[in-house]
Image 1 (cartoon, rainbow, N blue to C red):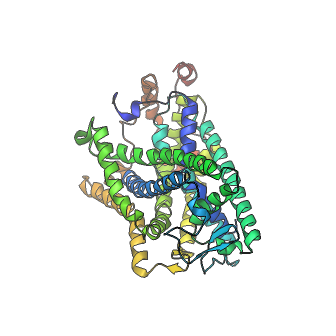
Image 2: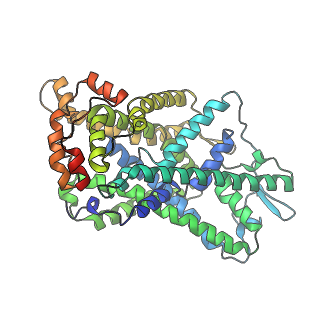
Image 3: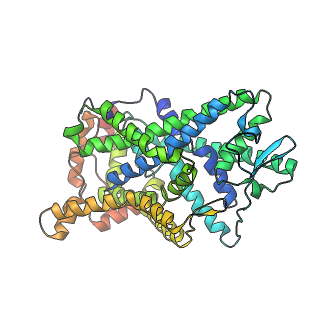
Length: 459
């Protein structure tokens, strides 16, 4: 494993934090958050691999669109400031010096489900922005040094991402307010194409007010490309690592070839999104990918970490690395709060489900069926693999489940100096369900690490 990708480490903690920011503040972030705010008033490895592959295709397309805007920023007359382009539709009209693409229909936010829909959309956006359940966070964490305080880095990254979202919303709605006042068109009429009205209309319009708008547009879309590439790399890497773990003999020491093949396949899959119907396909995939499937992945991760591997083992691991116990909020959230919250969120989102639409276009039934296929594409392979592993195992059904639910002995600390302490501590690691429940609740009755105080700080 010395030459494996996971053996490579970040040169410093700053690199890790910057990578987290690039992952969280990716290309979709500059248009999705303000739009959701407006609209509402304000076999896990396999599942992760599939969902990263699907979302990687849409991220490639968003990056390509940003690249198109970047090149067009160097034109003497910015294309989005007039209606004289061959791709303009009759919906584009001129009012003085202002160009506003307008759709005949508007989105009416019903006050009936206002609060509940706000929380649902905010929760979905958290999954997309901060990245739990996608595999990218675990992949980046695997490149940390043994004693890295990842909790501090995650707090910094989360705070910066939330701040960016706040500033992002203030900029967008300030511009939309000015545009609405100048041309006498309600903001609802300007939100014509979902998030695209934000990222590819509001921002270019705002920058067109500046002196030398070409310069500012070029800088803006260049800066959009950078986190977009970062997010793309973070989406692709877990997919590659999972393939390497599934087919170790076939793909050993063939990372460059694997990357080339995967990139080419993603390029082919993204071609339909570059057609005239591409925006409709993009929104359909975006609507059904990264919502229910990611929630199910996160629920499964909470159950596995808290109740199968056990927070008592995680507490032991944290003490080995940082010589401090697992924070109580992390333990209680993982074992109790998050499973209940995600279950409620999943049930409520299913009952409040609304089919996708794009302006005044409502997707037909067959398109929605295709969308549900994208949702199930990451869930069914994981379920199928689980069934296959259970059937392949030997012994009574209950014994099979118990055996497969145990952690693997191959799971050991990355630092060889902690391995002996780790294996010693496993002698007291088998807890009953009652003991595990009590530890998850109180943090008492965990694993006894002998000589931890003397040995661990020396690691």
